[in-house]
Image (cartoon, rainbow, N blue to C red; front, top):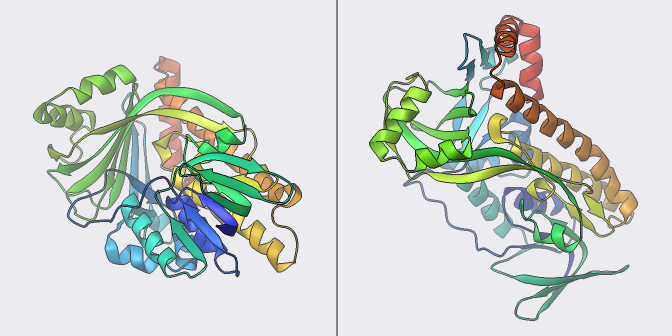
Length: 387
């Protein structure tokens, strides 16, 4: 099996990159240890993403946005953020940007299934799943991957979009800057007594932020509750009625009572940032290169920006008849994305620390800051444009 580019990881970032690269007559392999699961409209996915205008445009450019819209999306027009320790609050509204909405809350399964459908329509992308890789050998001319059944796959360039525990990153010996956020995220779908009003809600508490994100049904929301590990264990042990009560109280009954909750899922939160995104004939993208706290919902969007920039660098090199696999070319991608991702990580860490601090001077300062920002239209517009 011989390819020009092999992408390890057929998730949202890897599949988007494959579509972006398919405009050239390249032979592309998109491989994964798991076979993509079919999306069903009978239930909501546990994992959702807050898709920005930039990510929406990217999906439109590769021809999948109309498919995503046809499946199921939830545009949100307003965002409400408030501090549990005080009266500070801020509201973002799409009208302040002159737009119809701030973004879309979309189930990851909806996005992924639309991308996989598009990939199956492209003759120069081969989706190979399931496949288990056991070894990699990289020399000056080619990269060779060995599979568990002792087959080989060769490629001019290999890209790791294989998640936070990236096999490729580990095999390439790329080091990480890493620390534990000391938070566990609880995610599920809940039913609320009152409609969500096409609003994304977030309350910052001492233990961590709680977000309720609107879904297509007006009384269904996806929750992301980031909290201390011991508190997460307490919540996981509760019966449904008890959990509904605690969640309703934590959310200050902004949407009435929580009347139903689906199965809870939890995962620990860690910051990871690869010291290098590229080597000769190798690149990392998405969670393989960086993971971030979900409090602003920017993880998938950052990964999609990685995919867009890497594809731009490769496509430009091909157009100019240059080697897209050498380190000089690939570093253009690293330089463009690494600093931006580092800044996003730093901002999220700053917010986490700011709202975890319960000293009175800090509480007063941040509540004043929220109120001041809420009354400063220019500043609010700048924040909305950045995210």
